[in-house]
Length: 490
Ligand SMILES: *Cc1c(COP(=O)(O)O)cnc(C)c1O
Image 1 (cartoon, rainbow, N blue to C red):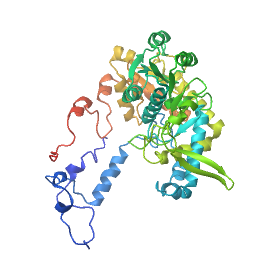
Image 2: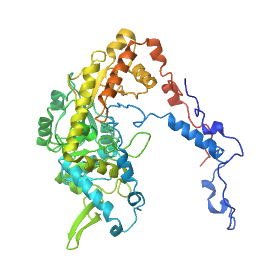
Image 3: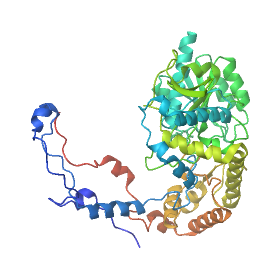
Image 4: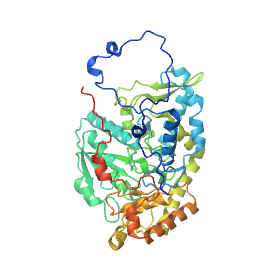
C-alpha cells in the first residue's frame, strides 16, 4: 500500500496562530526593528512561515525520514558513489566530546590531539596515494579537483608557461570538465574505445604542449583499469604536462596500487565514498587532495605541521607558505568526515584496506557474472569494483528501459543503480555493490533483476507502485517554481 503520510508540505499543513514554541517574556527595553535595520534590507511583507504545533512538526519530519532509502535500511548499489556501510564505531568516535566540542578558534596548544590526528591523516593519505603532500581542506571531491587544478595553474604560472588545455575522457564524471572550466582551462574530450578505455589515437591527436593536465579516472567509470595509464602518463609528462587522477574509485585499488605509482601528479580522495563516511542527502563530505613534491608548495594554507621539540612533538597550523593558492575552505575543512575516515583507515590497517579492495572487486565480479545474461555488460568480461550493464537489448525487444528497472527496484526495497551514466553506454545501469554486502544480498539483488525483467512492461513503466510519490514528472517539475510567494523588492 502506498504510504501517503507527510507528502503534504509544512506550508499546506500550517494553521494560523498555531505555534511550537513560546519565547520568554521580554526583560529588556523593546527596540523597533525600524531603528536597527536599514529600510532597504527590510521585508515589505511578513515572511510566510508555516505555523505548527511541535507534535505535528515532529510527526512530519519523522514520517519524512521513513521515506528515505539509505544504506542503513536498504541495499544501495549506486555506481561511482561507493555506498558502503557506515560503521557505527566511526560515528561513535567522531561524536566523542573531545571531537565535536572543539572550537576552531581555540589556541593551538589546546587542540594538539586533533592536530595530531589531522597530521597523521595527511601522512596516511600520502602513503595510500603514493604522493608526497596532502591538503585536507577541500569540502568534496569536486572541490578537490578544483583545488588541485588551481595548484597546477599556479605551478605553470611560476614556470612562465601559459598552458590552456585540460584533457578529459568522455566517460569521466561531469565534475572533471566543470572543474577545469572553473579554473579557466579549455576542456578537450578524449574518446573511449569500444572496449571502454582511453582511445590512445585520439589522445595522441589532441596532446600537445598546450595541455596542462590530463584528468584520468582509474579504474574508470565503466569499472575498467586503464592498462595504458603508465604510457599515458609518460606521454603527458614528456610534454611537460601533469596527470590528475580522479580518486573516486579508490575502493577498487586501495593497498594494491597507488596513483603516484602509475604516474599521477595529483589526485583527490572521497572519504565519504572510499572511507565509509556517510553521504547523500546533502550531508557534508570531504575531498582531500594529494600531490607530488613539486606541487606541494601550492597547496591551500594552512597545512598541519609537526615540530619535533625536546619536550616531544608539537603540532601547528602552517600559514607561512608563500606559494600557496590560499584558503579554499574555512578552518580545517569538514573535520567530522575526516575523523570518521581516519577511524576507518586505522581500524582496517594496511592489510585490511587491501582486503576491502579485493572484496569490493570480488563482489562486483560475482554480481556481473550473475546478471550479464539478462543485462549485458558491453565493456569488459571482468570488472573492478563496479560494472556498467546495458538495458539497450531489453529496450529494443520489450520496451523496458534502464529507468523502468531503476524505478521498479524501489518496490522491491532496493535502491537503484546509477542510470544513464556514463554517457558512453546506452541505457546504462552502473552497479557497485561494495565489499560490505553479503553473498545473500547480492543473490537477492540478481534474482530481483530477473523478476523485474520478466514483468510486464506496462507495470514497469508505472513503477514505483509502493512509494509515497510514484514517478515525478521530472521534466515539467524542473520548470515549475517550487516556492510560490513573491520576493520582497530589494
Ligand atoms: C563522486 C565523484 C566525483 C565528485 O565527488 P564529490 O565528493 O561528489 O564532489 C568525481 N568523480 C567521480 C568519478 C565521482 O564518482
